[in-house]
Image (cartoon, rainbow, N blue to C red; front, side, top):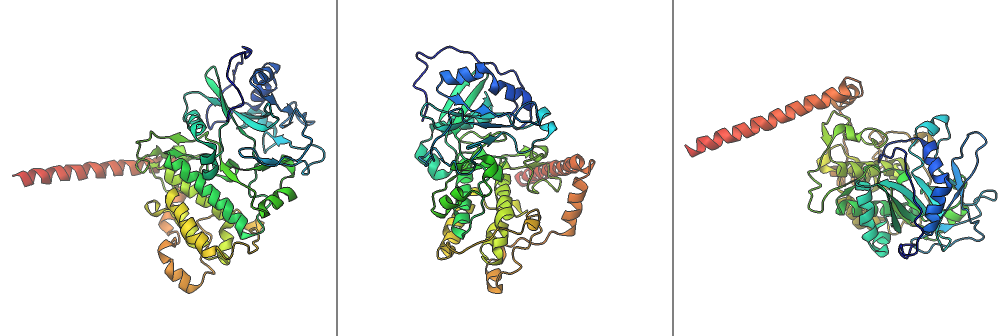
Length: 449
């Protein structure tokens, strides 16, 4: 899997990383860009068999956000796992251009989550992504674990493989194949394409959870597809559309900035993080919206994946009823009843795929754009399902939000409530536990008498 044959004979060039790098936290983009553009950095990677991409100038900024291969590709590239399909048809002007950030604003130069990843070509001209990772973090532990897995295992379980890990002073550079973003673009024309995507995402999350890894940032942007071209021309990619129709697209979960990895013997069902660890861009579900003082990131992951499926596919429940119980069980606010990753994968394979195996080639349409922002917990996925179906699956149906929950969420959105409600709930929780133990002790003594 590695591109290098060892350190023997390698030039002893040095590399220095002198900017802030905290997993999951933004940094100064211009500092990170300067690092990747440095001749010293380019030489360090060249000594190890990688030719970094070339950054493009931007007429609106002092530094560019986009880069292209230094060795210009001359032909269409067919996927050979773990490497992806790539095409030159998506852009005549800038083939295989990759964008370093989705938002070109002046603030992005000051504070951005971008700049931790750059792209390169290896000694066989294959395209790879290189990420800076701080040592002694769960993120690097996860990459070390993935590097030990076989390519066949990672391909089957839809997690991006690690090709190489290059140590540096206090950091490591993790090399993975370059795959494409915007995995649902263009939207699948047939149900089979959507089901393949959902299946892959479930398999990826289940694999991580099985190995006690909570991803903690499940979103569309953290899945990849084995096709890339010009990042700015993917929305209308006929090549990707054709690959999807032929069943040649694969998907993979990646990006472990926020992830946690428990020891193998750790009990993930009992693991908790403080409520404020759910805040920020990762907070896409309502698991801590009622003032909960802690949360289980594994349960949170499943809810986040369910929310992603709701955004993209919940409208399919109008014509394909089985989506209603599936999505409700992924996102229910009754956390003890929510699917685990393994249960969700089992339900998908044994119930959904089996019930829809004769309908996989039916055409589907994307959701009305005006409905994409509709909250998953308010969308009525059961509105048009047949009455007999609704009765059969009633045990999976999520009830309407009661007014008490709505009120509590409103209080928790205030500057006072966001911290004080969890503190109050924690106080009563500890008081209840104390009284229960005290009562148990008292009756135990009485019994001995």
